[in-house]
Length: 104
Image (tube, rainbow, N blue to C red; front, top):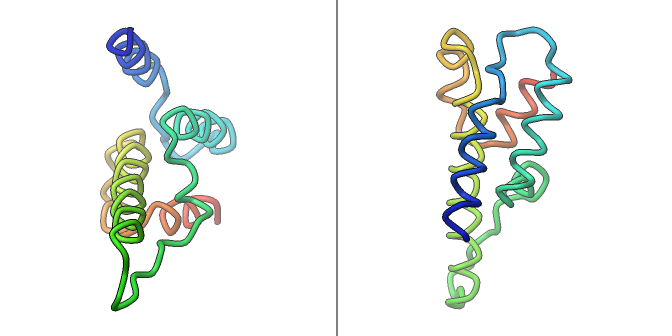
């Protein structure tokens, strides 16, 4: 069953138009929905957890999950951009920074 869900999500993801530089609000809403479905949208509003010198295993795992989710989120946003926009934004380091720069 989980395999079918992932297959359906992959199919629906392909239906999301690439952002070409116009109709941003429509693309943004669709992208936000996709990122919510993937459970990674929180990285757009939640700062990266800080690791203290004496960090617990739990804190390290939370940080690692956030970093992985940020990577996934950033990758999905970049993947749904036209090649010319991808070239402009590919070096932006975090999903939030990328998302905010697209909004401005």
